Image (cartoon, rainbow, N blue to C red; front, side, top):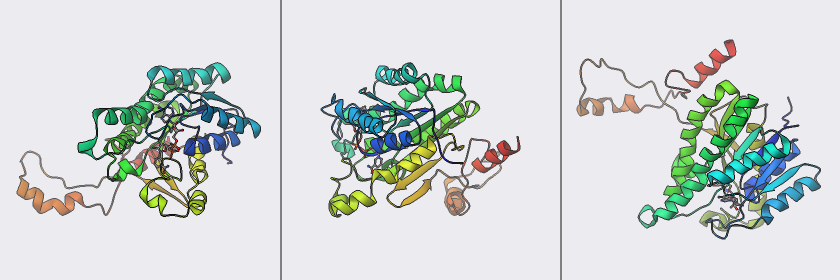
Length: 309
Ligand SMILES: NC(=O)c1ccc[n+]([C@@H]2O[C@H](COP(=O)([O-])OP(=O)(O)OC[C@H]3O[C@@H](n4cnc5c(N)ncnc54)[C@H](O)[C@@H]3O)[C@@H](O)[C@H]2O)c1
């Protein structure tokens, strides 16, 4: 079935530039009316309050025949995020998809990282997701429908030097997804992650990027390579929840937390550290990984049971 958000409403944060802009435009192309949020700050989150990036994207969407409205709020603010959801409801009477994309960087090694650099990055990335889930959930539950997509990063899921604050916030989204996929399931609310890689102002000044030909990089690492994955995750056609999709110039893949069967023993007796050492290979062996759905089931078991029900 063709992917379509016809008649639906989407909210994309940080959509005035870069990846968020590409998401908003692609969602509009697939029929969604879009709340384009952006507070217009620098990569480090300074100099906010410029409403023109969000408005420009609204103008682009309208010029292409779509419908959109701008929102200048701060995603770290509980009140501003409430207004984002309210704006969608007041304007169009529904909200079907939320893409938590807005983000900043304050890269420093841990001993150089101030408390403010830690707090602001966690607030912008991770608290954004709490704020928007908290405010959109009542709407989603009432509609018995919702799609919630968060922008994570390999910086947290894998690791990247000098990004303790950013990596912790991004990996925190994986934990939030694991919980919200359970809380949302009964209400047809799917929660997924996008782990993007793209040429934007956030990445264009990084060491590796500067060694690439700028024109070539703009093409092969265009945000438009990531947008189709977000549109799919935000659409009714996507029936999966709890998946992290990695999308970056010419490549789509999946990143997951897996576990093995491990080693069992009779807990009426105790094992010691020597036993751990002796069994380390079997305890940590990942040759037959399984993706958990909950404490009780693997993801495969859960979806098989769901298909039978
Ligand atoms: N570009 C990449 O390769 C890459 C890789 C991994 C993850 N990401 C993530 O993707 C998202 C988009 O990044 P990008 O590369 O497009 O960056 P970008 O700087 O081009 O765009 C981010 C946008 O978010 C807005 N924003 C920041 N804080 C905000 C706030 N508090 N409230 C409202 N708007 C705010 C900014 O004004 C900006 O327009 C970010 O969450 C980023 O961490 C990007």
